[in-house]
Image 1 (cartoon, rainbow, N blue to C red):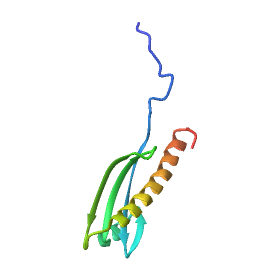
Image 2: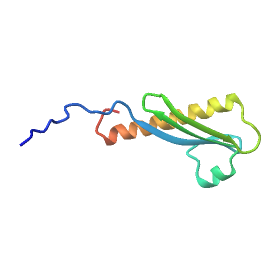
Image 3: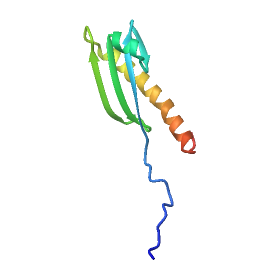
Image 4: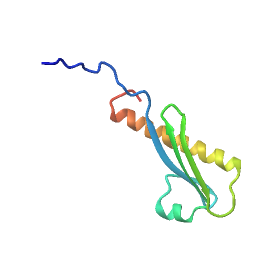
Length: 97
């Protein structure tokens, strides 16, 4: 009979989460619902690690082009949303928030 080796420490090195953000009626919005997404000026999908590393950013101007300042504002909002998701993930896993 072969002995089993048990994992003695968590193999997880980081988490990952994704949110949508966009410019809707001139306002930066986190987690667009269908009505907002279908009518927004700009929408972005952002995927980040729990430690703040960017995995993916995909953004589209639905009408006029968006500015670098607007991108920065949307990325900041996405990072804020992802931080909340990261806290929830850590709590669900029983890790310190």
